[in-house]
Image 1: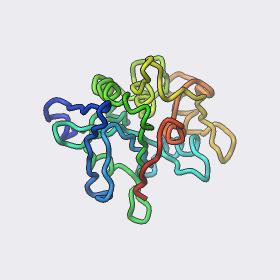
Image 2 (image 1 turned 90 degrees about the vertical axis):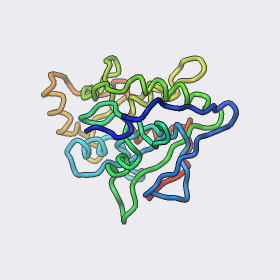
Image 3 (image 1 turned 135 degrees about the vertical axis):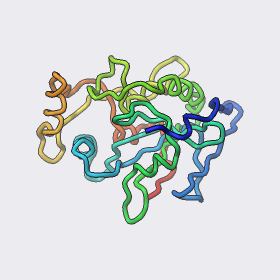
Image 4 (image 1 turned 135 degrees about the horizontal axis):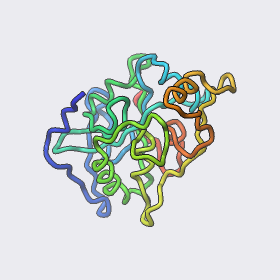
Length: 225
């Protein structure tokens, strides 16, 4: 799928150090709330695919919204966009409308939440957006392996946001492919990695949207549901 905002000029950054943000209105979602450049959009994917169900079953608790995707708000010559790593396209720049169209709904409202870096860390946004832009076109990471040059959604976010010393703002966590309900490896993941000649990387370093949404480095400043 070709994304509309990929065809429009050079990306523009605004200085965080002088306290100026580009305010973006999320049309079609909630006109009373404005997004900031560099916000993280956490969503529950639409549809009932086995992959989506497996992600949600292995990365969320009953009392939490089972976020299965995350992208970074940016702007491309006045077009509101989201840089995201999505299957099967890989790292792409989607319009905001495309991102929300892919999110599941509950009672007519999109299951999307906005995470914002805490004030003392917002200096990291311009470099993160630049780094994410440089990764456009990379393939999707079906192996969930942080040592290769492919990316799944929260891996992309984790790797581009860095502090003033170059350290990742989001620390890796031990990945789990265990179904929280059964306590066993989800059958989807067993087959997923078998077809790729790999064993399930239980406990390997990684990340997921559900845990990232709980990070102490961000505030959930708005939900659309």
